Image (cartoon, rainbow, N blue to C red; front, side, top):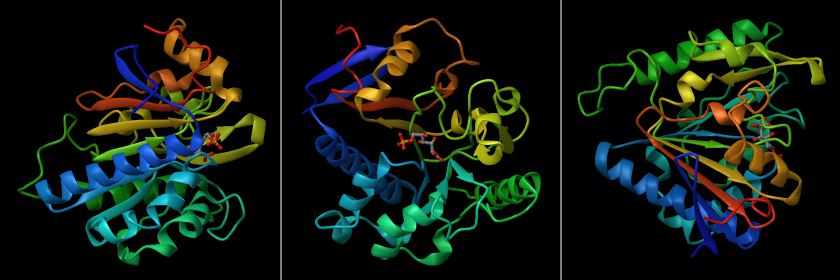
Length: 264
Ligand code: 6PG
């Protein structure tokens, strides 16, 4: 059970005592949604976040009881964002996810759709991923409900992290991607890294059936307070842009990250 459940900005925030409990509850949520969608529609489509927070959850999913019970062959893996590096680069979200999860569970390689961070042209990589998503999601599939936004992929689940600067996916403060209301995937130049990132746009993330943030650590506390309790400033805190049109929004956090939140 969470130590606290809060209602913030129209979403539920479940606070767990530490990072281990947070990872376990996130793994259980993944497993529960996977079962729900595979039973309901024959597949489960999930976009994963990168960074370090998801690693503990991935490690649990690759072990018993999850590794034996999750319907891996019916799950399709995507990413919310990727760095513009080759897939074997130390900074690659794909590499991190392969090493901590996907190479350790029986998911078919053809169910894994990575962003081509190795391409020299970031716009080309973004367009290529958009084409992949359109081909995968927007094929006529009788059993799939239509998306609330036509021609926008609808993930069953998008996992997100949040940076200390309030970014999520690669929607960084004061960057062009925050104003991209037309594309489903975009290349986003991030000045502080002097590099491009490939990212789903808020339009695509907000089209998901379920969006779940996974946030841990004292270093996120002030930003999480601003995002959930402060005034709406999406340029400064892009995580505030995440408001699913007709999907669930759930924040899974540890006590350290939630330490500055007002209890209801
Ligand atoms: C990335 C992630 C990014 C991440 C946050 C939080 O490519 O880095 O997708 O959005 O979720 O930066 O990262 P940590 O979990 O490492 O704090």
